[in-house]
Every structure is written in structure tokens, then in C-alpha cells.
Image 1 (cartoon, one colour):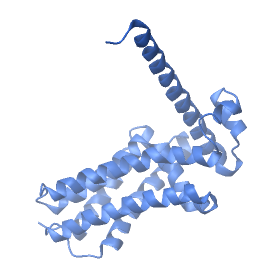
Image 2 (cartoon, one colour; image 1 turned 45 degrees about the horizontal axis):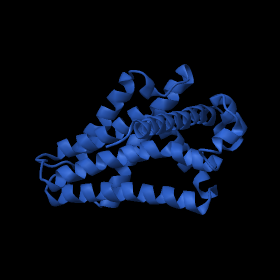
Image 3 (tube, one colour; image 1 turned 180 degrees about the vertical axis):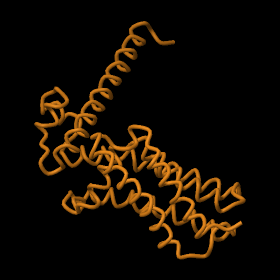
Image 4 (cartoon, helix red, strand yellow; image 1 turned 90 degrees about the vertical axis):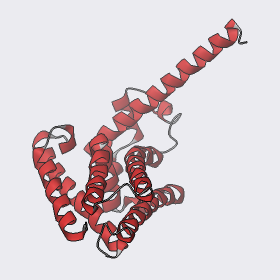
Length: 230
């Protein structure tokens, strides 16, 4: 049976852990704002420390380098997307889909859901991919990002292959089909984001954007008409 002193130590340990997590999150929140305003190259750890209202040495207690911090910012969106696709794959394996339209709908909802949950992280991921900055990062970080991206696309391709196998989707090349799904979604969201940010300085997901929702509904319908069966 735990003594009073042992319980006290455990309470203190949990409090310190919460404080550590809160401090790390405050650093990430500050870094997100600075990266979006100044860009990756121009942002310094001093900038982030100032925005987080802490000293630079404190940041290094949590993140070894700027690129590690940036990588940590991208992770939540990537993981959220992966988790959703994994759930869809499980439903496919259990035979829960009887219409291709339902599968297409879930795939679009998964992508949009990840974006809505992490709109700023989505923009950071896209900036890094499109700017080519990923190739300037250390081998360990770029390798990790590439691995995560490959796992996501591999799972999406497996879902699409199962859809074809189960007679839910037309027999298209799954590599090209996966690119179309992701490319169409990214293009629509980015265009809406640009329009929204130009006038409000916030991504479209931070407010109710019927234009974005309507555009994604149209994109979903076009893909459904083109590839869905049954």
C-alpha cells in the first residue's frame, strides 16, 4: 500500500508532467504563428522564444533544433489523416461498405476532418512540401517525413485497391487514383485558404466557410460520378 509520502511524490510528478506538456504546447503554438508570419527560413529560435514569452535556452529543453520543432508541428495533421484512413481500411476489410459513393464520401470527410482540426498544421505541411524545404532538412528528419507520407499514401492505395476488388470502384490505377483524391482535395482547400487569408488573415477552417464546403461537396460528387460503382 502506498504511503502518504509516496502518493505526494506521485502527485508532484504528475503536476510537473502537466506543466511540461503545457509549456511544450505553448512553444508549439507560438512557433506556428511565427512560422506562418515569417516563413521557415526567416524564423529564428529567438523569434519563437519572444512569441512564447520564454528564454531561448528553455526552448532547447524541449526541442533540439528549429527543424525538429517544425517537424513536431507537422505531425498532428499527418497522424490525424493516418488514423482516419486506417479506420476506413478496417471498415473495408470488415465489408461494411455496400456503395462506392459511401467510400468516396468517407475519404473526403477524413481529409477535410484532419484539415478542420489542424488548419495551420495543414498549411505548414503543404508549404514544406511545395517549397522543397524538406530536402534541406537533416537526413533523419526528412527520412521520417518521407516515411510517414509513404505510409499514408500506401494505406490510401490499399483502400482504393480494396474498393476495386469489392466492386465499389471502377478499375483505375490506384497510384494515379490516390494522387487524384489527394491532389483535388489539397487544391480546393488551398484555393479557399488563399481567398480567406487574403481578407481575414485566418484559414478558412477557422470559421464557417460555405464556399469551401460547397466546393468540396462538388469535388466529392465529381469523383463519385467518375469512379464509384453500385
